[in-house]
Structure formats: C-alpha cells, structure tokens
Image (cartoon, rainbow, N blue to C red; front, side, top):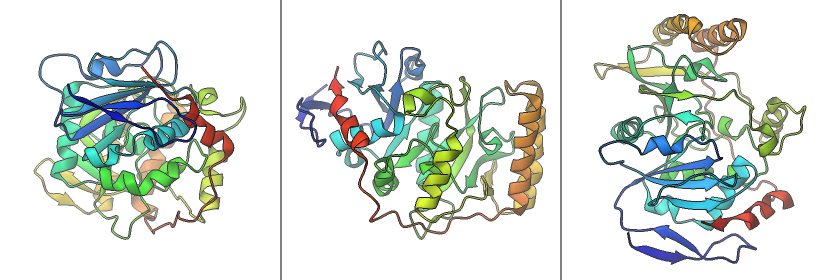
Amino acid sequence: MKRRLVRPAVAGVSASRQLPEGSGKRNLVIVRAGRSSLHAGWTEGPGEADFDLLVAAYEAGATHGQNDLSVFLPGRKIAGYHALFQCYPEIVMRYDFIALIDDDIEATKLDLNRLFAIGRQYKLDLFQPALSWDSYFSYAATLVSGKRYLLRYTNTVEMMCPVFSAKCLQGALNLFGIGYETGIDLLWTRLTDAPWLRYAIVDDVVVRHTRPVGTTKSLQGFGANERYDVQVDAVLKRFGAAFRGFVTYAAVDRRGQLVRSRFLIGLNSLSLWRGLFKTPLKWAHFMRRSTDYTRHCWLRPVNLQRVDIDGGEKPSRQLQNAGRAIMPR
C-alpha cells in the first residue's frame, strides 16, 4: 500500500505521520483501543471490508493488523479524538463517512459494511447501529426495536458508536476540543438549520455493547465519585441548550416506507419489554429506561433547534497537552 508522509498539526508533536493512501475506500472506522479491545473481530472472516481501520490505542499492548494505521494515544477518549483530528486533518477530506466505535463493541465486518451502505443510501449525516437486547446501554432508544423498522430517525446519536458524514464531522470538530468527555453528543445533532431526517439509529444492523457503561471513567479523566451528568449539565449550560430526552420521531419500515407517526413508533417501542429476560441490567433499571423511551416518543419535544458553538472558550491546557502523547506505531 502506498503511504505518504504527513506532518502533524498538533503543537508539540515532533514525529512525522504516515497515513495510508490508495486503498480507494471511502469509509473509515476509528477505535480508541485498549488491550482487551474487540476491534480485531471487525475485519476477520471472508470478503473485503468496505472501510479502513485506524487503531488509536489508549493503552499499551493494544493489537493492530498489518494493514491498519495505528498510533499510541494514551488518556481520555474525546481528548484523544481531538488530538487525532488535529494530527490528521485530512481524514475529513479523504473519507465520506467516519465511524468512532468504542473498543467494547462486538460487531462483524458484514455489520459495518451494511451500516455504511445504509448511511449512504439514505443520505444520513450522523447515525449508529442498534444495540442488541443483551447489551449494556444508557438509552433504551438505542436498543433494536424489533423487525418492523429498517431505521429510526432520532434527535441525537450517542458517542458509543456514531458514524459521521465527513461534512457533519467537520462541523462538529470544535466540540471535541472544548474539554468535556461526555455531553457533546447532545449537541452534535444541533449544528445545522436542516436537521430533519438526517440522524438515525439503524435497526437493520445490530451490535452488542459488552461492557457496563462507565467502566473506563478513570481513563477519561473522571474522578472516582464524579457522575457523567455533572459534565452533561456543564456542557448544556455552557451553550444555553436543553435536552429533554432521546426521541425517535420518524422511521423507515422494511418496505421502505416513511413512518411519521410518533404514536406508532412509541407503540412499537413496547416490544423492548421482550428484552427483559436478556438484558444484563437490573430489571428495575431496564424497565425504567424502556418506559422513559416510550413516554419520550409520545410526549417529549424533538428538540433539534440549532445551537451556536462558535466563539467558545479556548481548550484547557490539559486538553492541548493531550496531543503531545501521540506516537506512531
């Protein structure tokens, strides 16, 4: 594979970079990987992957394939992404779609190929696969909603496994540099005046989240007793935004027909109760989150009003220094 020399854009990084060139693939998967990362399974098996894989390891000993681009970037997840995009600004020009997938996601090559194909077919700007019922999850909306829908249009896409169009990622890049490790996913669907039918959960592609939410909090810069909602509230307050809940407001059914009835979508969400015997969560938590999702489908505002993130404060020194640790492998 032909490679070209790339000089990083992050201050303090002296090593040159090489980014693969010439594969012709228009999709990229980036994983912040530790030693127990599952990303090796994303490219195994027969057939060709319709994507390149970039392994940005946060922990020494993370594996990478011979043809993968690999860098060592210890520390926090979002700060690491920020440093990576500073080092490789051409990513958003070389690829049509860029996926940021956590290393505890169990998926196959065919899953990811299909995910990119659906995003391209439906001209989505930001989307994610659905989670299996035996996954750990934060929002019940992200669980697969049964067999009725191909995809559901939503007011947000969480940061566990988002797939961005290059244009959408370009518009959201400033969010990665403001110093927060959570909460920015509540804003990155609110950076345009034309958000409708652009963001989705793809029920036709189902992956499994294998690790309890919050397991790697210490690696992301959180204190021992610090809750995620502390940073979420800080992000929303900083930009004068509100979040009233994860809402799916339209869908495409298996016949390719657009469904705009939030009542029907909420009614279909009741099928999640069949996952009660498969979920790794406590039943009370599963029932509360599932009930919240149904109520949000029926009653909550979609809440996609544009938020202006320009002119914010400069990144903290801690965030600026995150780029200094990036090393080629």
